[in-house]
Image (cartoon, rainbow, N blue to C red):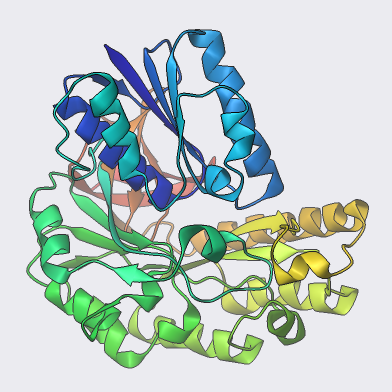
Length: 404
C-alpha cells in the first residue's frame, strides 16, 4: 500500500513529516512526499499566515482528486488552530501540532500494523535537519505559533547525538521552532554546540534570535570540524519602534552590534534574515529604516513578506494598513534584497570555496557553499560529495562555478 506524507510550512514540519514517513516505512508502506495516488495521505499543515492556513484547508480537496476513497490524516498548526475546519471535510483523523505521534498510532490500528512510535526522520536529502527543540515562549505580537506549538521544550544532548550518529547525510542543520532557547537540565545552545565538536560533518544552524549571539557561542562554532558560516538572524523590522510594538526584545542598534560580532569571528559569514513589511504600526519612516538596514548589515539574503494579521494575537487588535501600501513596500524591499544578495555573491567571485553537490538542474549540478551561495557547476559530480570550486560569475539565484 502507498502512503503520501505532504508538508506545508517550516523546516520543523518537514522534520516531523520525515519521522512519520520513516515510521510508515517500518510498517511496510511505500512512502512518498510528493502528491500522487495513494491509499493514505498524511497532511502536515501550516498556519503561520492566513494564506498558509487557506492552502492547508485546500489540501484535502487536492488529495481527494487523486483518490476519493483514500484515508486522510491531518496534523500540524492549521489543524491545531481550527480542528473542526478539517473534521467537516470528512477526513479520517485530525490532530494538531503537538501530538503528531497520534497519526502513527491511528494508522497502525486501522491497518493492524505494529506501532513502533515515531522513528528518526527519513533522510531524503544531502542536508539532514535535526530537530533539537520545539515550542516558543517569545509571544511576538504578530505570531500565532506559540499558541499552537506550546511552550519551549528541548531534547537531551545524548538523543541528538544518537540521531546524528545514524545520519548518513554530509551536512546537518540544527533546527527547531526557537533553537536560541535550547536548554535541557541547564545545558545551553552553546553547550550543545560544544558537544558537536567530534562530529565529522558540515554543521549549519537554523534560525536564531540575535540575543543568543555572544563570543562564547561564536568561539564554539569556530571550533567545530566544519561549521557552515551562515547565520539566519531573525530581524522582522529595521525600526526600533516597530520592534517594540512587535514585542521583539532588541533594538535596531543591538541587532547591528550582534551582526558586527559575527563578522568579527566569521568575516565571510552570510547573514540572512526575515523582514515583515507593513506591520500595523509601521510608518514610512519606519519602513525606510528597514530598507536602510539591508545595506548597513550587508545581508546575503532577505526573506521578505507582508504582514498578515492572525486572529488570537495581540497585533490582530491593531488597525491593519491598506493592502496597496503593503504591496508597494514589499516590492521595494524585495528589490533592495536582490541587490544585497548580488553584492554579497560578487565578493566571492574568483575565490576558492567548497560545495556539497546536491542534485542536477538540467545539465548543471547544484549545491550550496558553507556560506549558503547556490552554486551551478558544468561537470559530472556525485551527490553528497564535497568539491573545491571557484565562483566565476553570477548565475540565476547564485553563481556559476568551476572545479578547482
